Amino acid sequence: MINLDRLKRLIDLASDPRVAELEVNQNDFRLKITMDRTANAPVESSSKSASADLQHDPDSERFPLHAHSDSDIVIQSPLYGLFHATASPGQPAFVELSAHVSKGDTLGMVESMKLLHPIVAPHNGTITQILVQDEADIVANQPLFALRPE
Image (cartoon, rainbow, N blue to C red; front, side):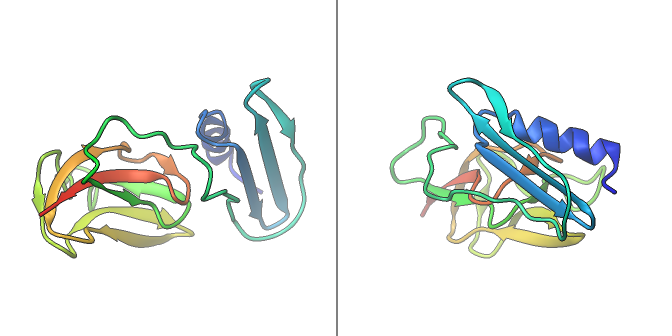
């Protein structure tokens, strides 16, 4: 069974206007929420089945970006999970706004299915935006950083 805190975080995530559909399968628990943003109400939900997953539509424009330069590269999350801006609680963030980074530098981590997946800089450059907060639930293809390459 899914714990109540996790369920509350999933409901909060589903209420985000950028999320159109959320599906979680964990052991014998299944939850699917599809949001009709025109009516702003859940359309479907159910329960039963196996293994945590989040359905997403990578072609949708659910993640409008704040104003940024056309030359900026948007670094997206490769998967659903929990974003970590630090290596451990109380530690400094991997990267700060306006920081210079080198190709391969760790910008953050995504915790998914109890594994940590590093988010790395694809190029040398400067971080122009940090688009997600520490400990935030994120979905695949969600923009995390904007990087102005050198």
